[in-house]
Length: 170
Ligand SMILES: [Zn+2]
Image (cartoon, rainbow, N blue to C red):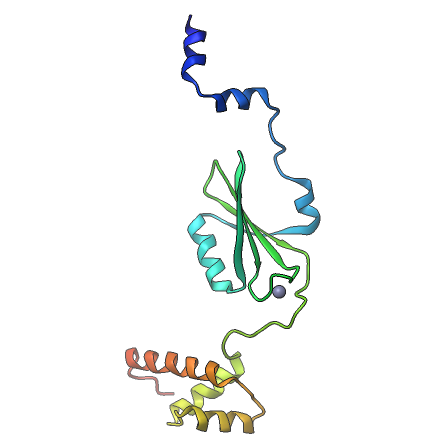
């Protein structure tokens, strides 16, 4: 009597779980193309890391009975073989990051100015050279060729920083 009641109450999914063999713990094929790159304690941590890396574009999400996988492409090109997968097990908060063992098949676009250029801009900014064109000219004399838009973004950042920090004397 009690078993009939149980069967009646439980939905079909729990029955399926009993009848089907357990899914393999980890797909073997993922390891041939992907290496485990990082582990995050929480989903929030992984989310922040991806935002900071600025190199991924989410493509798809696949959920299975054991985990959820979020697939990312290289942000710069979908044809690029560099891919990343976040694996989130259903039974814990931790997130595993796998990255494909591949090289970018395109030139890496730099996001913003490189560190050397930033330092030069900082130095010019400090002595009062603040117009983008004047800074560009000075940078070119040093052999640096940043894009004007990158420079303008960075100057915006410097100005906002200056608003908060009033004393930055050497
Ligand atoms: Zn790429």
